Amino acid sequence: MEEKSKGTLLMEELAYKKKNAYEEASETLRKEIFDYSEGYKAFLDAAKTERESVKEAIRMAQAAGFTEYNFGDTLSVGDKKYYNVHGKSVALFTVGKEDLAKNGIRILASHIDSPRLDLKQVPLYEDNGMAFLKTHYYGGIKKYQWTAIPLALHGVVALKNGTTVEISVGEEETDPVFYINDLLPHLGRDQMSQTGAKIITGEDLNVVVGGLPYADEKVKEKIKLTVLAKLNELYGMTETDFLSAELSAVPAFKAKDVGFDRALIAAYGHDDRVCSYPALTAILESTGNRTSLVVLADKEEIGSEGNTGMQCQVYVDLMQKIAEAKGADFAAVRENSKCLSADVTACYDPNFASVYEKSNSAILSCGTTICKFTGSGGKGGSNDASAEFLGFVRNLFEENGIVYQTAELGKIDAGGGGTVAKYIAKLNIDTVDIGVPVISMHAPYEMVSKADVYATYQAFAAFIKD
Ligand code: MN
Ligand code: MN
Image 1 (cartoon, rainbow, N blue to C red):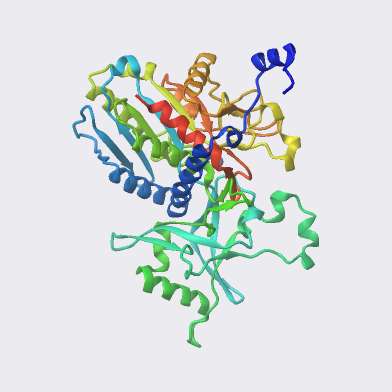
Image 2: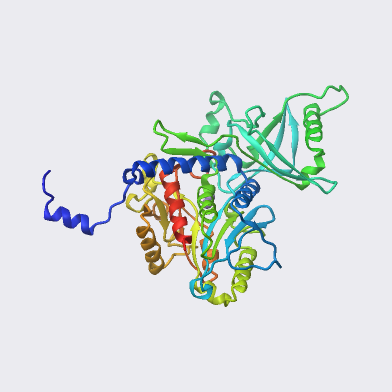
């Protein structure tokens, strides 16, 4: 082999180069990456909404020995607890052995809500051979992507009698699916001359739910009545019960491997279950010797509002209860706490290269991705983590052999976005965004690399390791 030149050696020593996690991985590690992704895909299929994610997370937590916490309960060292936030968010925590005022809490904050189509409160109508449900989209979507694909309905209905009934239709092989009409290209001349935002409008996103007329000459809206009769038979509900329902249409697709080599996964709702699942599994497998908190929050896609979003006081209350249990000053605990805001970022896409600045973009399979800041324009609305905290995180990852990269969300002024990071940083907690790069983010079927999912899991596990 030819001897490396002095310059080549110096370049290797001094210059930065991204690494592909698959290239770096041994056979054993590749197997670990692929095995881990099987659990992740099962989680994706079981948990398509925040409510289902909470249920699945609690089921897994209980199996790992975590028990429910309620405010007023006594906490002690060694506890492994979960707190259910109105069934739509869940916080899991361990009460460790350390000096908490000195070491603080290690926090992983992710979200379990994803863009989707919520039903309106008065959704059902009949029009020319079809019954429809009107929707109001949730989160940032390209509306035209939601037509002509199989949809499932998920959610709950609070009935007049005070009970709540759960609905999930469209996931089983034998289930029917639901559908949003699109225009045939033959008549699409005017539609196709519109901008992308207007090809399909919010009011066009009406979901087909029936087509069978009720057998009674006297009835005017026969198909609507067939649907109402079926809903009454299955769930005991009447049309008025839609007023107190939370039902969502989500893609009926299952999570699937992508590619001949199965290196990638396509699924609905990678954002942000692809960070929630690694955070969840990291704390469930942790010793609990360090005080850690994993938040799977709701409402991130609409600004982290409400009593299940990251801006809610409940997460601060939980931290305070943990501090009190340890007899530690809460301000000191927060000052010394550290948080990874676990959310996805845009993956560099060669098909849309013009919106990315390649050297500062996340490259697929190059590891978990640290975003020093998010926001838009001149870093507006961003947390912008400190050099010192990035130094801490970077050293932690290097010590633990974790493949990582750094990125911005596309080119300057190409757009922007935010995460929960700024709400946690406000508490005087060092926080930085980190997560899995996603192709086609917010589309009905998004894509990630298994290697990046696993690197993210390893990163989270290292962060909360004692
Ligand atoms: Mn997200
Ligand atoms: Mn998002």
